[in-house]
Length: 285
Image (cartoon, rainbow, N blue to C red; front, side):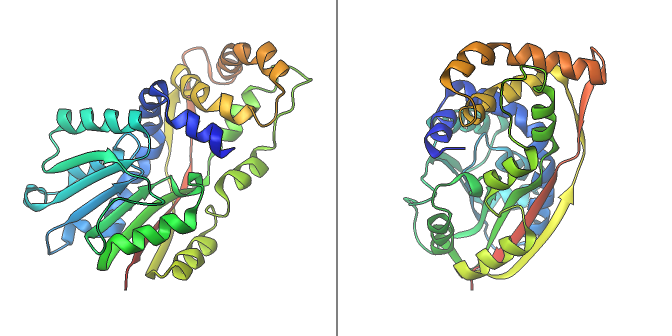
């Protein structure tokens, strides 16, 4: 997916509200990430960055699962480059009562944040979407305290993509659709490989890299699955369809996808998904 198309998508106010739907999938892996980071047993004052925070699901789960004793002393910063995402998370922080939390614009490739400051940095499903991942990792290393923890999730398998492309096959025989597996490889840029993730983090200067693959399952109502895909689909198909093809067929995509899924799972059916995420934690020396 082109960087410009991604940027436009993430800056959309509509995208921020729709992306909350994606938490039914991404949120499955928030707790495993937090557990692996060891923050629940951290003996000192936590200074946390929710990096590329999106709609704030990591901070939300931190707030709902950590003890009041930890939250009483913590400092929580949520940063994202998208203004709509920041506004969404600011409202969420108010509604859920996040103590001592700040939500602001942060460019993960060039953070306006102090060096050697944070004890924990969480980055959920964002690294492959960042144009300069090397710069992003260097920044994370810079702002972590010595001994601080970097924790992130990245997709290993995403059956929702294959499900989407399969549901669109009947749209028109003249329309090219990418192979789901090849598309995912291009999208994740090696971050779907445990060995690659480990080597990249070690090369960036992290130590004690711990990589695990976690699979979970969720069923999503057809209407929600279609609605979520309509957020991402224009940017995805822009790479494969001509402008004329998009004008002619893109408007029909939601109905075609819905009909295909209803034929497969029933009119009031649920779309079953079993994605696998790579959960990684590492330490700054």
